[in-house]
Image 1: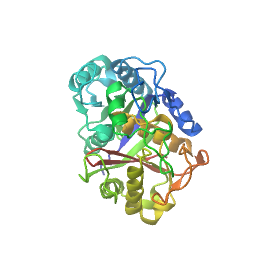
Image 2 (image 1 turned 90 degrees about the vertical axis):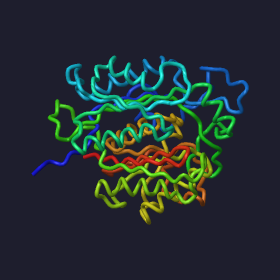
Image 3 (image 1 turned 120 degrees about the horizontal axis):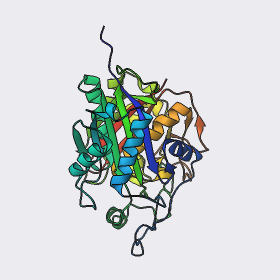
Image 4 (image 1 turned 180 degrees about the horizontal axis):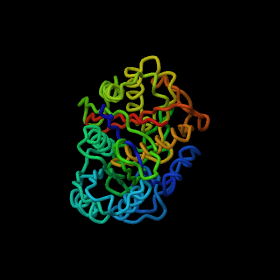
Length: 367
């Protein structure tokens, strides 16, 4: 009998305003103290909002990504020889930006980190990294590859900051309040992450997997260039796809790290999507959005949030939803609001959505 192949996370690394390294991310989301503060990286005097979740000291995005990739590979026990032939899937911003073009950057990072397999770039906004993870898991499950590195990065910079500010998407009260009454919008944050995904059939090197990507789903609704489909149909179909691929019922989901950005329409649509996809279980399953502490890392969000979701599930404690002011009738969910919550759950969803109606769901398991 042929052993089923599943994609396991064997090495992870992440950087955000919460700190450097996986342990810093877990400690930060469990503490639930938002990392937002005045932006000192560029002039915000002309902006309505002047805060974000940024690192006080940061290298170039290229250097930060190279460090993250190398750290994830070392955490997975991969020496330079074992990285030979390994693919790199990279999620970064696709528009004009300082530094090399995305495809060039992917090639440079692969060469610098000893990854000699193919490279692919993902520039599909806020679902870039989660789409890359889904592709990596699909290729591993089919037996196309044994090992893939997925990396993603966004460092808060003036162009995207100005666009979100001009679009009145940023929270003028300086706080992200997912699913809460009185929520005013999102805030941006630095995020750089890398993970090693390997087939469960690969002979281990004394490294215990952090978690397994057991299911993934992607769906579009094309409702509006910027606004979500109010009924959450696209995101619900992504969640349903992840559950079907994993062969699990809705009741198996023990936690949801929501996309919730703290914007009025998006949070309500996501709550509707969860009710549509999970049925009655949607009012019971613990839900929070770690964007409330580390901010929205755009193209890197999906990978940063996958890392913290997997670590929290493995640790047995669920992150708090910071910024909570009170319930909103449009979001009737079991939001984690009074500090981190102990759990024995073995499966969790992490969700992402992007402009244009793109939606992704990743289902991870531990134990």
